[in-house]
Length: 230
Image (cartoon, rainbow, N blue to C red; front, side, top):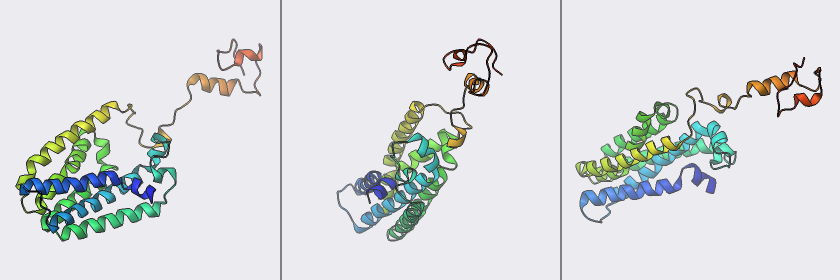
């Protein structure tokens, strides 16, 4: 169970639900929680769980290399792929069902947000700034979603915009701090460190079966061979 919570980023889902409640309270100018606001919070949890689980499914190969300490349970092998798929389907169904109990706009906005999360890892993530903008818009969406739930969407536009800007800055800073990788590094198999020319020369020409015209010490890894080994 703890690994399932890590897979769906339970702490982020809690923040999303609180953001929906806050968006409704801002729109209503009152800390009152009508039933539709609870349903909207549940929808945010469902859509978020589906998107987070799907992100780990797409990124599991890279996570084995970039997060070797087992931070991602799917990449570490502690969760089966079927469990992750179930989280995606269940999350999407919960999100759609809860949004349908709010209003039509909640269904449309929630479905659009889920579509962005589905497209993020295989497509948007590679586009740089457009990908960051997409993440920021979705991350700031709970405040607008709460306003939509209480039928006052206009009241949620400013909070959503401010939250999206904050998330955009955060995403850009994360990219700047991340170690640079060549564009061709799309999978761990293409990003493995390749042996240098010197290492290749040593392994091929100074193997135990090779012969050197001088002492074997000349073929040690720490120094270049004094003569050509063949």
